[in-house]
Length: 165
Length: 220
Image (tube, rainbow over all chains, first blue to last red; front, side, top):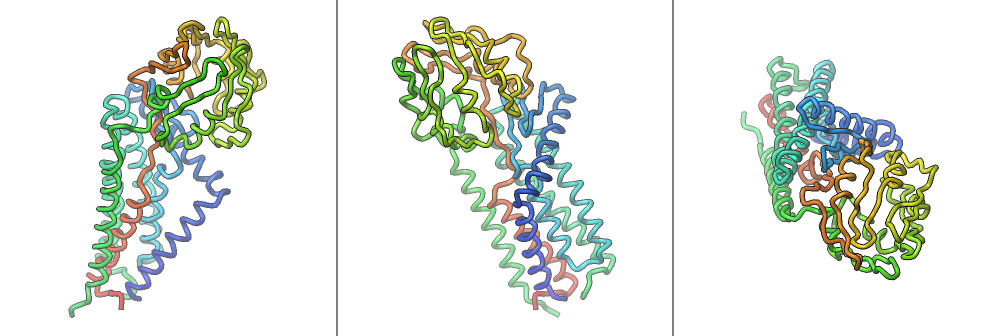
């Protein structure tokens, strides 16, 4: 086992996953419904927070404004990258499954928090929306994904379960 | 035993450079003037004689509506009957596949501004009660002000359309002069740009190589 194998597998998994996600059938049957579910979840949580929000398709309306959740904003891209790294890492398959499961829950959960936060920001301080949208949340998503991978990888390494080490 | 850390450093440097590029690209976008619908509206002029839209903002770059300008310039309204007589046949906005069908079947009373008819069988998904909204909307012919949007309009998918319509005014010359100042344009919220995603991939790759290097696994 060498680091080169990890590198190559990571690239292959990211490319293959990206290709599969771009297939029209997958996009329409899985990604788009997931995106709409994100919109409904976002609106439901926003209503709990006292914002008169409604989801309609992939749009979340709040008063006189709206957010459109497009395919790329459902957390799937970050999840693909994290999952590819976990699967390519030389760990027992049980540990990889644990990493993928925990990563999926964490990334999708954080992304839902992100969407709700953006609705709140758009509603109460719309001039700050670009800052939160472009800078704050992109950085946070990156930090969460890398932290998850480092935590999981350190856990696997401490248990001495890196294959080929 | 000392391992060669150059590949790890190279990947890490690539990640940092990619994030720097993403930051530069984000900074270069003028966030002070978002691609708002209100700017588009106020810069649009309609010929009151022919009903043809004669001017739209040339630099309109709303990514959420890439072909809205094409749609607008190819749309013609009969100034006598108020009926939309022509829309671009090749308009393929996937977000509103039958918007053109809806438009050509809609007529407006030129004297009172009231919408007289809308397609009864309009079944565009995502706009099930647009017909109700259209039929209940009135426009003051002399001032162009929308005076009567349906008060009971409850389309959850267009909460802000109602507000926007009731606060929009059009001069007799066809120019839109006022739109609601606090009307928020629809914002598209991707989780991350492609450049940031590439930076994340490189950073995670560097993290993996670092973890492996700690265990004595290198690229050799």
